Structure formats: structure tokens, C-alpha cells
Image 1 (cartoon, one colour):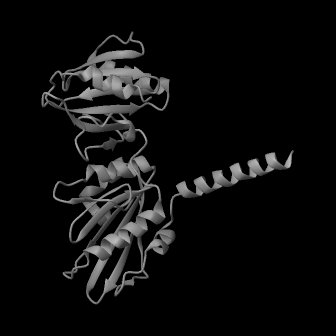
Image 2 (image 1 turned 45 degrees about the vertical axis):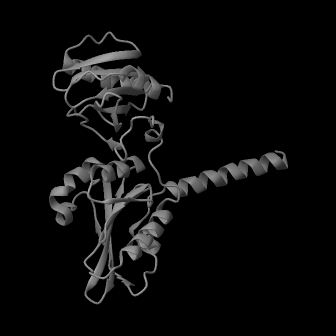
Image 3 (image 1 turned 90 degrees about the vertical axis):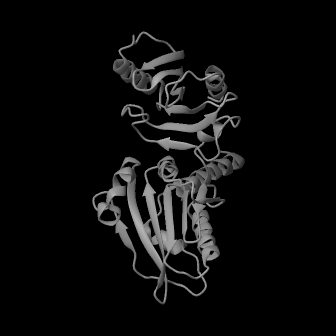
Length: 292
């Protein structure tokens, strides 16, 4: 092998190892080591670790939604000062999509959006963000004005977990025109009440006529996977399964007629909670389909 070719192979191997390491799930010990110094506060030596079997012990009624989003492990850590604390709960999920989906499911209109991790929300005492496979919640009981310290600590933690954290790549393909701010989301299953609608990316939109709707993409992982989802849907709607790739109309008796398009491993469509026919639906769908 020529020397230049050998160097190229070594570079490819090194880069592959680098990216593999970057996607590796952080251990509780690593997460604790990522915590930055917060002036005046001490990082508590003790950490608590929860898994799918005992998560209910810590968050009780909220646990099912975490499990639905492929929760794997939660690491609880604290900063302490006198009788005050800053708690950090780092929820590790199976994939970055799952962590994003969990964060998106808990967005609140009462909180400010912040440029931390892939996206963050917070107020004077709380901070929530996702980064890589991890969804992080931080809060304090302190009445002192320490919001900037919490946000700085959160930003440092987010960058160490995943320096390039952001929305899933499919979400970034959604057209910007008409999209409602901060409406992007991801659900693992049971989209619009159907268990077989899995791995669904969606965002809220408003058309020129003021109609509100969701534009969605279902990732079937393969052409056969997408067809299996459609077969299950058509079995539910009692429609003929003799369809082909391209434009479809799914006659959902609970959600109204759903215009859709099947393209390879993806199903792209529009859902309106009132079951209305959406003006320009075909254009929205076809515009997004061009990105796949």
C-alpha cells in the first residue's frame, strides 16, 4: 500500500473512532466529571442512578412518558451551598431523537427559550435542555439571584455532552414558511392515537387562510417498513391495500381524511385535529417530499 493511501486509511479510521466516541452514551461518572465549577457552590460527591425498573421511585407519574421515549438511565447530581442546592437530572435515552422527543413533549409556554444544547427553556429557577442522547433538567431552591450561574453551568454541560447538539436532521428539512415557532416534535409511537404510527417527526403550521395543522414525516426505516405501517393503517380504515408509492388519502374515521405521500422509507402527510380539509395541503406535502 502506498504511503499516502495508508495515511488516508488511518485518517478514516481515526475519524470513525472519534465520531463513534462522540455518539457513545456517557456514564454517570462521566456526566459528573462534566459539571463545571460554580463559584461559591460545591459539587456533592454522591450521585443517584435510576433505570427503567426504578424510575417510578423518583418521578412517579411522569415515568411512563420517559419509558415511552426509550429512557435508559437517569443520573441525579447536586451542587450544594449551606442549605441550598442546584439539582441536575440527566436522562439518557436510546437515541438523540428520543431525547429531543422527551424535551419537546415537556415544552412550556411559561418559559423562555434559550440557546443552550439543541434547544433549552428556563426561568429564574429552572433550566431544561437536550444534548445528544440526554435530556437534562436543572433547578434550585435558592432565593439568591443565581440564574446566570445555572445557565452557564447548563451550557457547559450541554457542550461537553454533544458540542453539535441540535434538532434531528429530518426536523431540519421541514419548510420554514408557515411553521409555528418551537412546534417541532418527535413521537416514538401512537401518533394521533394509533400505536402503529411510530417514529414520527411533526411540526405545527398555519396556512394563508389561518388554518392550523401538523405536517408530519414517518420514518419506516426502509421501504418495506413504511409499507407495513401503511398496511396497518389501511387495515384500520378498511381501505384497499392495493396502493402504490405516491399520493394517498387515508380515511381515518377518528381524525378525518389525511392526505399523505409515500416515498421510499418515508410517509409524509398532514393532520388537522378538527378533521378539516387543509387548503394547499398537497403543496406542503410535495415541498417537504423534495427533501427526501
